[in-house]
Every structure is written in structure tokens, then in C-alpha cells.
Length: 138
Image (cartoon, rainbow, N blue to C red):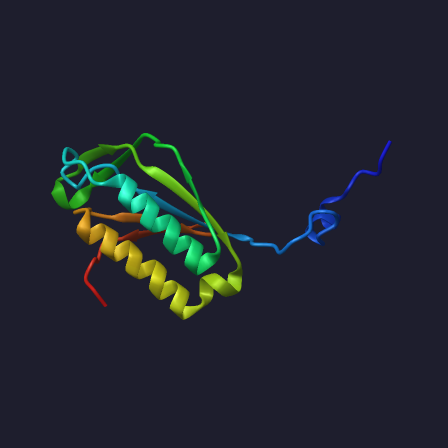
């Protein structure tokens, strides 16, 4: 029988090869506008997000539609049901802290939020959720 690899060996790159990307970025691409009824061109935004993640962080994966709900407190607690595409992108601590990369990511989220008439764009970086609600251009 072969040797069992320890977690430390895996972290050191034992047998896995390649670089390590330890920061998970998650983006939710909604299927409807803030009103919960008007569809958005979700395919266009998924493609655009994949391109942005590919150019800025080296890649991403878009998972098939999920089922979700979002409470819009600015509209009296109206519940917006939708089928978001959930995107995962792994990156490095240096890449996620780079100001030009953050500007690209933030700019994309603001543009998507503005052009798809959202109340919030959900973005997770590492273990922190960011509720992006200000969609003004910078």
C-alpha cells in the first residue's frame, strides 16, 4: 500500500503541483430585476463576468441556476425570488488586494447592478459578504 499523504504535505504542494489560490470570490448573477418579475439577460452577464474573472484573476466557474430569495428592505421587505447563477473564482491574497483588480471587480459589480436594475449585488470575498448597493460610476 502507498503512503498516506498528510494535510501538511498537500499544503506544501506534495504531488499536486501548480500554484495555490486560497481566496474564494463568489458572485451572484440574478435572473430578474429588483421588481422580481422583469427578466434580465442573465446569459450576457454570466459571459461578461466569466471574461472579467478570467482577465483579472485567471478564471472562474459558473454553476447552473440556483433558487434564491432576497429581502428588499428599501421596498418594505418585499421578497425578490430569483434563479441566480453562482460564480466561483479562486485567487491569491495578493491578487485580491491589488487596487487595480479591486477596481475592475467593483466596477463590474456596479455596472451589472445599475444595468440590470438591482437593489443589491451580492459578492463574497473569502468569508465576508459584501452587499453592493451603490451603483454610481466612479
